[in-house]
Each structure stands twice: as C-alpha cells, then as structure tokens.
Length: 214
Image (tube, one colour):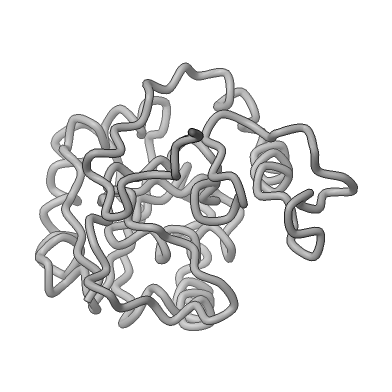
C-alpha cells in the first residue's frame, strides 16, 4: 500500500496562487485507504478551496491513479471541465500526480506527500516514478520527478552531461531535466524554475536520500 499524507491547506493554497479555477482529482485506491484522497477528502478540499475564493470546475475519482491508461480514459470524459480550469490539484501518491501530468496539458499540483510504499509499488510498469521522498517536490518540476527519473537524483537542474536529451549515465534513458524543461516550456511556466526552493529534508524520506560522496 502506498502511504500518503495530505499537504497542509496553506501549502496547497500557495501552489494555487494566481489560479482561480481548479479541477480536483482523487484516488479510490491507496489514497482513499489513507483518508488523503478519497471521496470525502475531495469534498473537503473542494469546500476549503471554495472558502478561499477558488472556483472548482469539477472533480473526478479514479480507481487507481498509478494506472496511466485509466487516468487518461477517466479524465478524457472530463475534458471540458479540465479545459476550463487553470490547473489541477491531485490527491494521491507521486505516481498518480505524474500519471495525470502525462495526460493533461495543464499544471498539476500535488496535494499529498508520499511517505512510504510499504515495500509495494504502483501499477505504472514501464519504470518506477516515486521514491517515497516524503515532501513531494513535483510542484516545482512540472509533475516530473527528478529524484526518481534522474540517475543522479538532481534537484536543482541538469548536470550538463546529457546529450541529445539522453542521460549520460544511462544513454538509453531520457534526461529527466530535459523532460522537465520541455514540459514547463510547453505550458508557459518555465519561470517556475526561477523560484528558490529550500534544501530538501531527506529525514522524512523512506530511502534517506541519495548516497553521500565519501
């Protein structure tokens, strides 16, 4: 089971600064079991966003957000409401946030932190995309995780060794930061990378963070 905890509403509202219309997505899988992204939590966050002056264009509950195809099919049925939204807030694990980012051309905000997968992984079989790092940073990277998808787990930009959009460590893999820059450029949000993000607290990570050089 993927264990998640909902981010504080103050943090979520900070993510949504400048966004008036929001679409909310929840997960009936692990997030519902953790009481962080099921039906009740979606209704609760909808109320809180409304109280903060936001307009919720619609909501959707997906059985398993770690299944990209299921996310795509479900959200296609809500396309008109998603088009009307400035961004989406997703209440689930990091895999679900990334699955959503992969199928919509909107900024996707993480509403939860993934604390632990308990030794079990999601359904996105073509590559693990969440390392349970505790405080999710997908807000600042266009919904693409540099910790899980960069061979060096670089948090503050590319290493400079990639070539042709491919990783220098594993040349058959795309450079995660190249993907991040491409996506943010496409969405007109490349200025997000100018924000100063505090150093990450690896103490809340299941893995303890990348190995330190000796």
